[in-house]
Length: 135
Image (cartoon, rainbow, N blue to C red; front, side):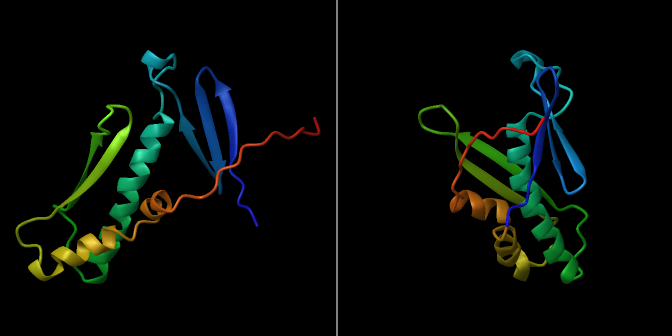
């Protein structure tokens, strides 16, 4: 059973994805010939890593009634040795001084449950095919 996401072209360098009633808009930067009106697809990919870890951290704190004010995740990207692409991503969970010491390792474990990260570490098989529409 597949879950279909529909990708469509809005004009210019804008490419949208429609899925589960949402439209996710993308554009290219002006430098790349777009208008810069929406994030580039790769920015959304990177954001999906940090926001996925973030919901696990948030849920962890909520379930233990730990206030989330003052907690944030800083996602840092380091290049591959070749200089092309990203070779390492570091997620730093910044917590306030009163964050319970006993939960520091556990909140890291919670962030590591991120489904996006797991799919990167054990990637799906990609297939690209063409099909003729009925139009």
